[in-house]
Length: 376
Image (cartoon, rainbow, N blue to C red; front, side, top):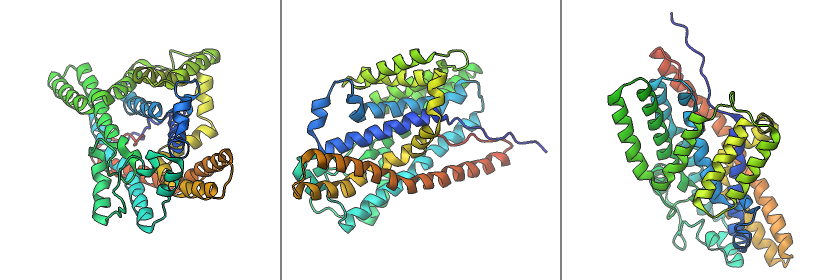
């Protein structure tokens, strides 16, 4: 009987830590849009703007996905059945936790447990009044059929309008961007094997996906480039060089320029990957915590802002508390409540991802192969 190869993982904890930190930046970005909309304009283009620059954090997500999803294939793995399995698992891996967040949002709306309209009227935040740019009609009550259909349609819709969790606007670019990464990896394997028909099919697929994604294709392709060109065994930076590069990356991520934010994302990831000290630090206990909460925190924090955060903000402002104190308490409570609400989602991921891997392993073992594990 053929001995099966133990499954491998492409998950790198220091990269997951960066993803978790980026999720925290998106949380701060949305909290400022909700309760201090003046903050975005006041901090724009200063060196610390990266702390609330959610757009830069999203580009960082996409570059990370390009790197993590293709790293193994760019480093010599030639198993195309493995690649197809990873591609087929991508949608269910994202859909289950994202779908639960949509259901949670619908439940809170139906029960009247959101105070975004009250808080938005006080802070004069269009983002809060519109339920995160969803532009839901006045008195909107989600239906069960509409909610369930959105758990699927959100992966094929590029926009905000009507979403019960508008943070999921990134799901369509993430899904199609992941397929673009897999197509490029397939092309790389086929070209290396001189299988020209497979090259033509893979290239055609990549071009179609690139056309669908438009400018969103670029960060994923940059991530694939990092997977191909970064070798932490050959290139190792001292701590001072890594720290300088990360400082440069943060300045670039504080810019409103699309190109600069992309460049900052690439530099941030590359410096963290090839500097052993930074890599080890990010892979420590704090980094592991951030990594474990990266996707759950990203999914659930807007719902917390519309409910817990908005309630606290409205209550404190009507009580006549000083504005700075109100912001301090509201931001602190929103962050704490977001991590607390993300915990069940982290448990869900801890069950769901291994379940997908086990299901894949049964199928692949039946065919005499071992699967790659699901990655973020």
